[in-house]
Length: 253
Image (cartoon, rainbow, N blue to C red):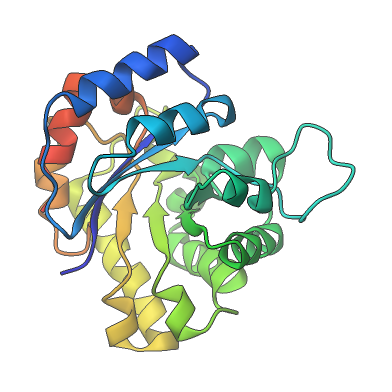
């Protein structure tokens, strides 16, 4: 069975003390993950070492960075490289989140460099893709998202790409008042897997976990995660609540 993953994205939230308490509250629930189930905590850079220490003795609980720079080193004040993350034992990194694409101008080509840098340092990318409202309304979402995959990931070998995690974000359904249905989520996940299969074959495509990043909550997680091509969620706001995120973890297939 493919990996089923509950990934928390704290974004720029919580003080150090609040983050530490949130992790304590979640871990104290005593969740026993099956071998194919994983939980990731994508936390702000200052909390990486603390968070890694918190989950150190927990099976299949891991810490992820929320981003890294696309260069190995240099005069990039305020940036963090994949090599730096590797040096403190971080093994997952979120790349290409819609907020970084929008606010920081990250391009598909730049993200290809970030993917390469992470892989060179033994870090698994959690690669985000997804379309904004104007693209969805124009009906060109499939072409748009397929291009994100092709330009950032399709230089990789079949052996390497199947080690990645992909997260689909329907940007048009976040903060717009519009809602993405479970059927729409499944439809896009199925399409993404088909795009990968066309390039690499079905066996490779079937190995890659594809997470849903469209306002996952405890209330909708069981229905979403039951979809055949939805392998968990990249969770924003709901991951800041211990009861909510515990319920989401427990909804994994």
